[in-house]
Amino acid sequence: MSPAERHADQPSSRGRSGGYYAKSLSAERLRQCYDSAPPRVQRYLEAEIAFVLERIGRCDTVLELGCGYGRVVRSLLGTAKHIVGIDTSADSLRLARQFIGDAPGCSLLEMDAASLAFPDDRFDAVICIQNGISAFGTDPHRLIAEAIRVARPGGTVLFSSYSPRFWDDRLTWFRLQAEQGLIGAIDDRATGDGVIVCTDGFRAETVSAEAFEALASACGCSATITEVDASSMFCELRVPGSR
Image (cartoon, rainbow, N blue to C red):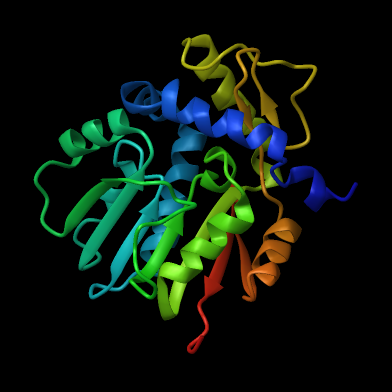
């Protein structure tokens, strides 16, 4: 089995992972995961947002897939003309509305990223960062195809996963979350090679550069792969100018 195949989401694990984030790791518990992040992980999170900000214009309409409690949306406010955040967790969206406040140019909607209720060619940029492509628990091909569909011709689609070089810091962060009772204990026998497994059914995988390129090719796009901060692996898709 190739690294790309090994790191790509498998159907048997996707549903469990997605349901976990919607039911067990949402709203305040999700925010606590980020609040507990050690300094190196905080740098990773900030570097991801900085990379996104460089690719968004002030006149852009931006869609974030899996906005959670609004961490990224709030960071983008004032940069884009309008930001739409979607998530499948109603609890996370309620917290996001409190976290963001009554900000102009911002909408938060309960919606499945793999079945978007938007017309074609709606957004200048679609973003899905912090390994959402694994965390959502859905078919990655469908996820990317939907993101491309709702992006305007010439628009940008951004997905990110973890860099292999970030493994030790990532695992340390997840151990901290487990110690705080936010996720189950780490299953050390099943954890490794980019995959973190917990005894309560939680599973966090990664998507390699090769897997991103294969997914993009299957959707009819070429991918630019960029490692950021030795922590993120970004896949940047430019939507064809005519379709």
